[in-house]
Length: 462
Image (cartoon, rainbow, N blue to C red):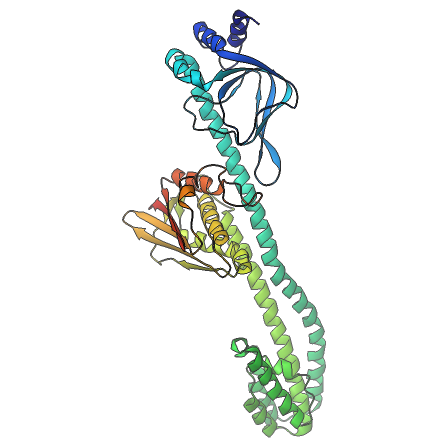
C-alpha cells in the first residue's frame, strides 16, 4: 500500500479524519502498517507499550483478570485509536489485547511522539481527548469491578455472620415449642397440689430469678460445673431429680433461694414447685436465646443497610462518619474474629459531619480497614479513630502489621499494584479509595514502619 493510499484511509478514519491532510501524511510516513489475524495478541500485561495504535479495520478487545478470570473491559473497532497516547501515564496495558477479527493497525513508535506533538497539533489534540475518554472508561470499569469484589466479600461475610444467629434461632425455636408442653404439664401438676397463698407467694421470688441470666456467663468452665454440681447435690439431698439442675444453674437462682423455698413447702409440694420452676426457667432461657439471635440478625441487617446507603441521595449531603465507620467494622467483624484481630473505634461525640456521599465514603473505609485486617498477624490489632482538625475531619486507620516496604510505598496507590497473592487482591482498592477521597476534595496519606502503619483520610468539614 502506498503512502497516498494510507493517507486516504486515514482521511476516512472516524477519529483522525478531521485532521489536516499534511498531518495525516506525517502519520502515514512515520507509522508501520501491520496486519493481525484472529487470536493474535497486540500486547499483553507486563509488556511495555511502545506505540500508538491507529485501528484502520477489524475488532480488538482487552481482557483484564482481576482475580475472577479474564473479563472484557474495552473494545476497539476500525476508526478507533489505542495503545500509547501522548501525555498518557499508562506504560503497561492492564490486560491482554487480543484480535477478534482480521485487523489492520498503523503503529507509530513512541520515539516519534516529540516530533508528532510539535508538528501535528490537531492530531495530538484528538489523541489527548481519546486518552481522557479512555481514562474515564477504565476508571468506571475499575470502580465497578472493585465494588463487585467488595460486594462478593460482603455477601460471603454476611452469609457467615448470619448463619450463626439464624441457626441458633432455629434451634431455640424448635426446642421452645417442645418446652411449652413441659411448662403446661408442670403448671397443671402444681395447680393440682392445692398450695396455700403463702406457699404460692414463696414460689414467686424464686421463679422471677429465671428471667435473669445470672453470673454464669462470667464464670470459668470449672466454676460453672461447680455451680451446677452444687444445685444437683441440693436436689439429690432431698430425694429430687437432678435433671433440672442445669436449667436452674443457668439462672440467678442460688442454693440460698432453694433453702428458703424448701422451708416454706413440704416435700411433695417442693417437687412440684421445682419442676414448674425448672420448666419455666428453660422456657424463659430459650426465649432469651431467640431474642438475642433475632437482635443480632437485626443489627447485621441494619449495619448492611447503613454501610451500603441503600437510600443514598444523588446529591452530596452531610455525612456522619461515626455511623459509617461503625457499620463498616460490623460488616467486617466476622473476618476480624476469624483472625482473632481486635478492631477498636474511637469517635468523639461532637465530631462534625462532612459533605459527600455516605456509600462512597464507606467504600473507602471498607478498603482501608479490610487491608489492615489482612496486614496484621493473628491476634493483631487495628485502631480506627476520627478527630476534628481545624476545618477538616481526619480519619485514621492504624494497624500493627509488618509495615509497607519502602520500595513499595510509592506504588501502593497505583492501579493494579498489589502485594497480595494472585486472586486475593485486585490492586484497585487503594487506587479507588484515593479517587473517592479526591472526589470529596480530600486527601489520603500513609506512614508506615514495622509494627505500625497508619492511613489518614483528611476531609473538609460540611
